[in-house]
Image 1 (cartoon, rainbow, N blue to C red):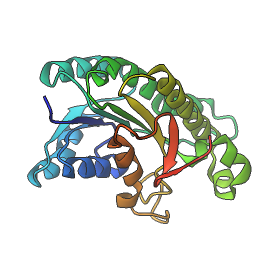
Image 2: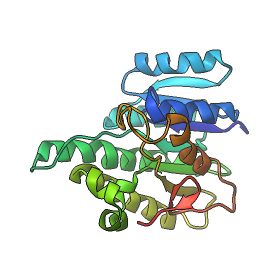
Image 3: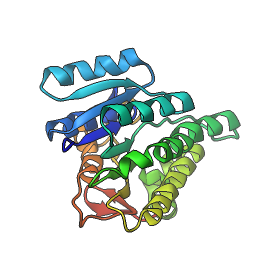
Amino acid sequence: MTQKIALVTGANRGLGLEISKQLGALGITVLMGARTLSSAEAAAKPLSASGIDAVGIQLEVTNKDDIEALAEWIDRRYGKLDILINNAGIVLRSSGGNLDAFRQTFEVNTFAPFLLTESLLPLLLKSEAGRIVNQSSAIGSITLMHTNETVRKLGDPAYAASKAALNMLTAYWAQKLEGTPLKVNSAHPGLVQTDMGGANAEIPVEEGAKTAVALATIDADGPSGQFYYMGQPLPW
């Protein structure tokens, strides 16, 4: 099969939906994951109507059974996976010692991408040019937490720590996969006008999706194990 297959998590709204649109516009088949099948199919329907090969799939990213079933289904139907975008994420206020919020944030933002990626690595390694993009945030940059006023202001501890840990997973997988065609990078979307970013955020969702899409489609000479925003490297 030469058709590229991409899986986007949290694809029923916001950045995930826009990333799916932009990948689909490039002729890539997009598997759009959402917590329920009905919301996934509802998100995929208008994309399909516009000519994009979009498939809504049920994927609660913290549910091991969902992940295992999806890996088996992708293997049966496509035999490989070319692009994985770990986009699903949450922000819960954990400052003041809210340990439940801290745990939930890590479950979605860090543990889920770890389990999903590890489960799908065999399929990604079957691709001639596999790509993994972890949707991170500048708020997860330890350097910027020290030096950037906006990051310091917005940096809820659980969210910041979960994204810093996700960046470490990017570095881990990149070195583990050296010598293979599979590339792994982290993306900072910017402060985007989504439910998470708010209406007063700096950039529209169309711009916010561009970094992840670019990293998902880099050529063989492109980077791996790096952290980017709009083509520019960010510090860890």
